[in-house]
Image (tube, rainbow, N blue to C red):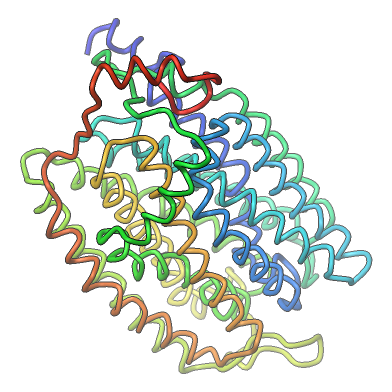
Length: 463
């Protein structure tokens, strides 16, 4: 690679630079949120408030995930991502109030507001990640984003692990929550650094924007069409399942059998192993020596076998206990009590299994994004598809967090996760088996010229 090609690749207006920027936004905002959620109960001993806050979050996320793509198409990526980032800071800050008041109402309300912001942010992120690269680069761009994004989860695991290393407290201190708030505010400001899509140019000189001018009426029609699109309907089980397992992994597993500092330690590796898995999967997904369909079917087989194996291992673990700590006087019934990372003889197996959860999450979600990115190269369509994915994903998460909030037995939660996985495989296989090698969406020059005249905001997805 010569010097000029390197300069083009790192140019501010290059697709890779934009994906890196949005990766760091998500590193600082959703990444911190994931770290907080990964502690189980948002770092609180009593998970009730966090479960209800997550339910409120995903209820609004369902709606704003589905319409989020249209909001991004109409308002542009920079200001929508920046405003969305502030909702993450509000949510983390609400736990400081919870620590001092014991009143969870503000945290639940903040969760609902976060659902609005998250729905819009993830629609914008998905559009940038899967529409900016060329077809043969999508796996790599998804991996680059996923690696940066999950650095946030790792950092969010290091913070509570370090701050609570010498404490026996069952809840995170104010200092941890304040650190999260500061980082999430920085992430929101970073969103303003993103370039308008109309100015982003690939290394081969092509524009990333090849779509028609849009308006509110058209976006409303296009949202309705999502629910009549056979491919989108086929992906609903995959979307529904893709975050369903978080509530079980973070609560009934991490928060129920490990002490506080070990939960943070686990999350360092949970999110860290996601980066490794995403990087390795990208080599398969971008392997041009195979047809897109063949790559997809191999990846499908890896995801199906891997997830069934980890749920099988989880069943063996789950049969050893029925609940986590309920109160200061009623500890977990896991044999020997809560585990600490220093108890190597006890902790090795469950900790490795928890790390494998992270690999499974990365494989499933990176593959899901790759499938969506293989359906079209149209920016506006992909923003809607990404929003649809996150909206249906949030519907599943809403159900999952309420199952834990309503004290559904841990074993039944595990069985539910496993059954949903199996249900999602058949329609996922169908969609992958019908993929074509190319999905270029051509736009006539006369349409491009006409749309350019209509554009009134350079940050909109217009040429």
